[in-house]
Amino acid sequence: MVGEVAVLIPCWNEEKTIGAVVREFRDALPNAVVYVYDNNSRDETRDEAHRAGALVLREPTQGKGWVVKRMFAEINASWYVLVDGDGTYDPAAAAAMLELAEAGGVAMVVGRRVRRSARAYRRGHAVGNRLFSWFIARLFGDRLTDVLSGYRVFSRAFVKSFPVFSGGFEIESELTIHALTLGIPVAEMDTAYRERAAGSVSKLHTVRDGARILWKVLVLFKNEKPLIFFGWLGGVCMAIAFVLAYPVVVTFLKTGLVPRFPTAILATGIAIYALIMFACGLILDNVTKGRREVKLLAYLSAGLNRHV
Image (cartoon, rainbow, N blue to C red; front, side):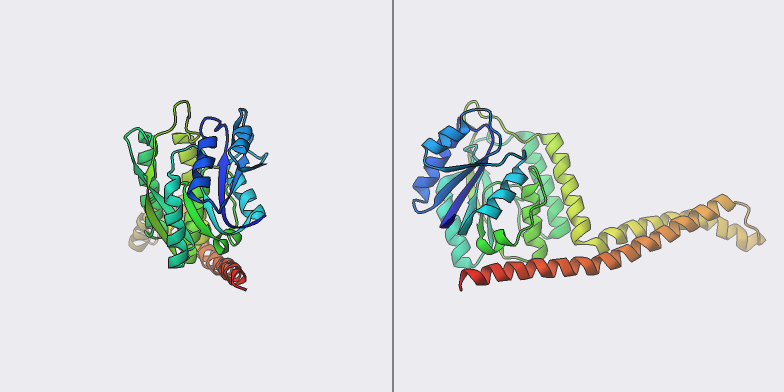
């Protein structure tokens, strides 16, 4: 499957919106190929997408991350537009996002959501997005402000060098962190975020999926910055060891006796554990640098092959 621009739409039970979404993107990008990947819908989503002119495929493993992994592996194009099928994103912005990506040499353009109405965002989703954007900015860099947007444009180099590990809605945070840790050129563009169509319900559960996203961010932080992660753990453990050991040491200096052997042993054990954490951080930091170099080489190779 080869094309200059591919529009990738993962969807599940989007019968009420998918037809309109496909038609709008075909109008906005008349030379693009629109792919709809159905993720076990129980309604007429597949038929509606097919009638609207999309190429319809299926991913049986439930979860948006699994769908994106399948899409990135199967579809070959120069540029990719990834968008949800719920009708909340503005197809008219796709051409400008592609133009920004190609003209500016940007590997990923994120559609920064600008609400058209107060009901476009659920309150919990809006608060969660701001918190996660702030948290990821503190850990990985502040080049992006809407890290959970489902509307993005990617270059071929980005797609073919991105190892997808997430299975659910945490895929957006993984895409963002991949770009930030490799120093890949990224950009944002304001896009209208529309209210859901009548009868359409968000698949994102604020608490459950929010917890999964937070866990994924912490795991990626451990994997991508192990020296800082294990350094902090080791520092906390060493501070606890010093607090426990201080009265034991003071008593020993005054009397020459160690009356609290359990405390002394516990403090020593925690201090040893802290040193192990520091050592783990140093070792894993070297491993991470090697992994990062491999991913960067894959990114550069994919970009080079496009021009050969």
